[in-house]
Length: 373
Image 1 (cartoon, rainbow, N blue to C red):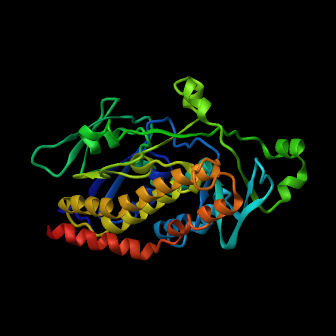
Image 2 (cartoon, rainbow, N blue to C red):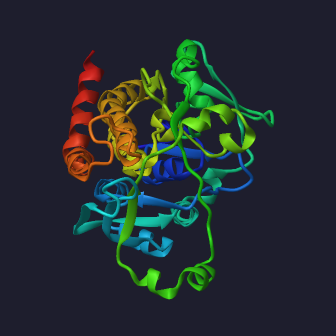
Image 3 (cartoon, rainbow, N blue to C red):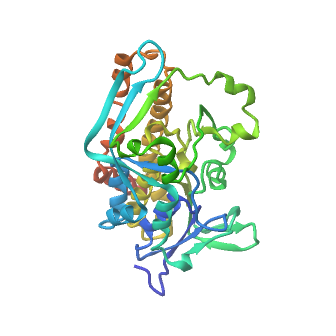
């Protein structure tokens, strides 16, 4: 516990999106930790439409916010996805159902900005900082501490830094050092363009009946994406491309680590981007809740890397292949519904089936090993 003679460990969270705000909620009530969260934009905000929360995302969020998760999601306007039907959309099998996904534990969808609003709301106001763009992280010689330099010229000293600053974030470059360019984000081979439309306007155009359906549809088509390569570098295309980190050699370097999209950006085909960030926060809550000195932070971050990186890499690889399947581009399936069904049916088991308590205990076991090494 922090005292006058043993002050709290100061941890900077760089990035105030869903990953950073979730982590802040995970750490804010640990007595021996003082968190400060820095967002480069003028306000804490999220772009994009909805985010999907599978059962693993919901379970991880419950571990982060015990007893508060359901109320938070309700205030954010989350709604259940009771059924998803995938149908062949073109070719000789057009109209044939591939599968229906439904169950007792449905996933949920929630507006990104609304979810972030509810995650930020309970955080101490004096821990929230906007218009703070990271310029540099400098090691302090002979100390387990770093200086964090911002573009406005301010400098803060911290016992640890956690980067949640997104797919092109600066903290990732610090962690990877000379390998940063080699493992930079790259186009994933897919593009995605969405828009938000007011509900009443959508009903007027599409008809009321479509909004009474308790089912989400997905259409598997013959994806004609090859023409994209000719205008890949155009400004419009860059706003539509899905990016990913195909691989990352480590998520931590000393007393600095990365989480969320800064560590493991993935394609959206298995709806796991937010879930992985929530799992990151859950694991770091367990680990940092058990540190007693600044030296322990290095061991905690090594343990975090050891348990999180293999799982996240598997999700990245699986999501990429799932995209090929859904776009009718997988060599072993094409648009054949039977082959598509065989390939798709088991793909979510390892994602949704993670035992969160066991995952935390695995991380804690690794932490104890790292402390002794």
